[in-house]
Image (cartoon, rainbow, N blue to C red; front, side, top):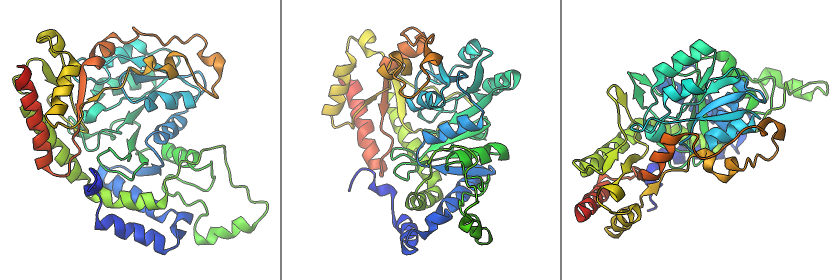
Length: 405
C-alpha cells in the first residue's frame, strides 16, 4: 500500500462512481462541486465557498476580488511556498516581503506594520506548518489602513486562534487540496468568505468571467429555464476576462468524502506531532515551533529548529544522515526565503510589466530573522496512516538525539 492510499476509501469511490455514471454530465452544472462547497462551508461556519483547481489559483482569485491592480503592493511572509508571492506577480502587483517571528516562524505583525505604504493593498498571512498567525494585530492594521486580508490556510485546516477557526478571521481565505494536505483531491483548493461581493467576483474570475455566475452558484448554463438563452446568437456570456480555474467534478467527488473525515485527519496529525514533541523533550539544540497559549495548530508537519552545529559541533547533515540510517523517514528542509529564489532574485516574471518591477530590489538581507531561521528548520512528516508508523519515526528521532547527546 502506498503511503497515502490509506486516506481514500469506499466513500470516495461511491461519489466518483456517481459522477462517472452520469457520463460526467454533472460537469455542466457543477453538482459535485456545489455539494463539496456546501459541506466545507458548513464545517467552517461561513456563507460562501468556491472550489478551484489548486491552492494557488485560489489566492489569485482572491487578489482579483480584493481589487489588486498593477503596481499595488501585497505583503507576504519571506518564509513560505513560492505560490503566495507568485500570485501577486500574476496580478502584476508587487510582493513585499515581511519578516517572521523567530519562535513561531510565522509572519511578524511588527514587520507588517513597518512595510505598509500608500501603495499597500492587501496582506496574505500564511498559517505556516498549521499554526495560525497572530491575527488580531494584523486585522487591526488592515482596518486602520483600509487593507484586505487573505488568509493562506493551505497548511492549516481547523487550526484555531483564540477560539476562532483559521480561515474565518480575514476577509477571504484560501485552502489547498494538494496531495500532502490534511484533506486532498489530488490537486485543488477552495476559497471561503462571508462577503457576497467577494464571493461573486471570485466565482466569475475563476470561471472565465461568465456573467451568469453568482456567489452561490457555479452553474455556467444556469437553471433549466434559462438555458434557451444559449440558443440565442445575441446572448453575451462573458462579463470580463477570467481564468479557467474550475475543479473537475471527479476531484470534487473525492473532496466531498474527505470533508466528512477532516476532523479525524487533523487529530491524527496532532497526535503524531505530540510524539515528536515528546521525543525532543529536554534536548536544548532542537526547538519545536512555538504554539502560543490560545492557539491550536493543525500540525500539517512537525517543524523544529536545529542548532546542534553550534551547540555540540554536529553539522546538520550528520544529524539527518544518522536519522535516516536509523530508519527515520526523511527530514525535509524549509523553503528558501522566497526573494532568494532565482525567480525573484532575477525577476524572471514572464508576461509581467517589466517597468513595474524596475526599481524593486529582491536581495539577501531583506528579512534577517527569516534568513537566520530558515537554514535551521527541519520538517518531519506527520502524514501516517497508523500511529505505529509514526512511533517508529519518533523513536528514530529519540535515538538520533541520544547518539549525539
